[in-house]
Image 1 (tube, rainbow, N blue to C red):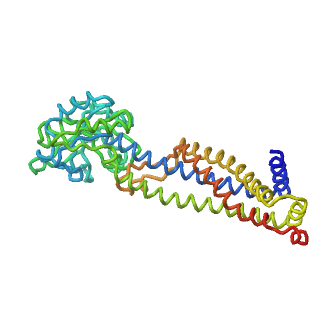
Image 2: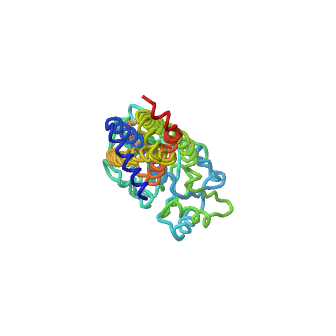
Image 3: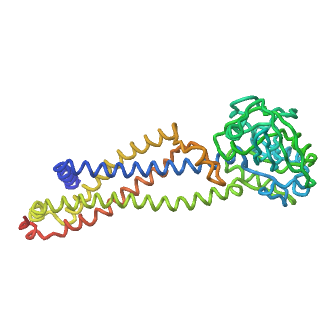
Length: 410
């Protein structure tokens, strides 16, 4: 123990000889780890936000559909719709772990104003369902829908601004019917919402479910019953309880497969970047230690001549590497966590144009980072381990020097 303590003292004294070089090396480790922590928080924030927004605004954690229903087609054929929605709602609401249930009717259509026509996604909803609370809370103009309101609709902020309309404006909605025909109606924009997710704010029109059913001629049928559970894990036993012949029961994993697949692919790319950054830091420390060994060749020769064993010299050099790495890692964690915290509060604006380009993602116009403590710890440990592995070369080089040759070095 005493010998090990003395090696620590010698290691620190060696680092203090060239404070500028040691400081720059620590700075390199700090910036490298801070960059990794920021990237980790950024990636975690993007994907977690995309999945969370998709669940809360669109898919829910569980969905019940007819076996023949294809969401891409937004079919209104009776055979493709659920005809026992009230029974399903009561059944789902009675399952442990269910927070809210909501019937929805989806249809494609066109929104017409006096100046412009644009394609939209019409969503008939039960305004009283708790599933739609995020939309209720995101109202920025006008009023939220009422279940018995037959004349009002809700528009997203981006859609309203692109058409130059707002709460109180008159619009015409054109939509298909269950028999393949077309029907239109005049509505008032009752309110404007801003969810922050561009794909919804620029193309979604909410209409009371009873009105949507009446206009499309589907009777009391719905496209799906959406179930919101206490958490994502609860969705799987709830889905199992709802499975029955003639139903297609989907979990949030099934409905967000694109996001999850993209996440797995993207993480492979980011792991490669993590490795590159860590390797660069390891090479930086190895270079610093190798330069230090060359500068102290005569000194190391004297230590060897006085009886210091090769493994002790090797340990001393590795302790120098550890000191540089640990100080850099501590500072890097502090800087990285500070950056992630700042961006988790203030976000990074990317603009509606960029967010709207991403298809299949619930992308916000401002992206936020998210704390991922497990990844922070993992990256710190990986940084320390790889740095020490990189330091093995200068450490072995120092340990294998012959005392006679070292003493004769200039």
